[in-house]
Image (cartoon, rainbow, N blue to C red):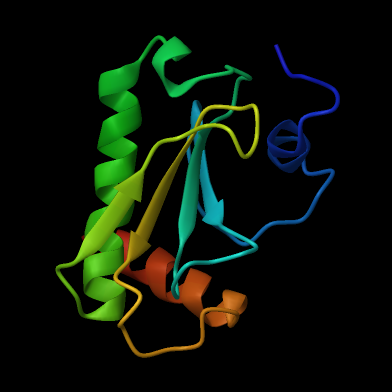
Amino acid sequence: MNNLNCIFCKIVKGEIPAYKVYGDENFLAFLDINPQSPGHTQVITKKHYRWVWDAPNAGEYFEVVKKIAKAQQKAFGTDFILSKIVGDEVEHAHIWVFPNAKIVGDKKDFENNASKIRRAIILN
């Protein structure tokens, strides 16, 4: 079930635009609007769960996170990919995945960064 006031649920439904890099039946990955580094991605459940730990398919969830991290390594030429699960920023299950902040590039060049990650996913 989606939460009507949840910003991530609104992104899933297409009510709020986002720079999407990956999506399947259960998960969506899109660039964070306030990135820590170029390519900073949020990986969320399409169904509304409050916490990552509430998602019934944690193994599948982390396979998607791995897919994004591997694509970021290729797209941004770094092995140093960070992930973070806190969950207090938005009350919807989400995992941050982002390259080391020392990589070269404009973290606000959303279109180009999203395109690089999408291309790298296809090549993996």
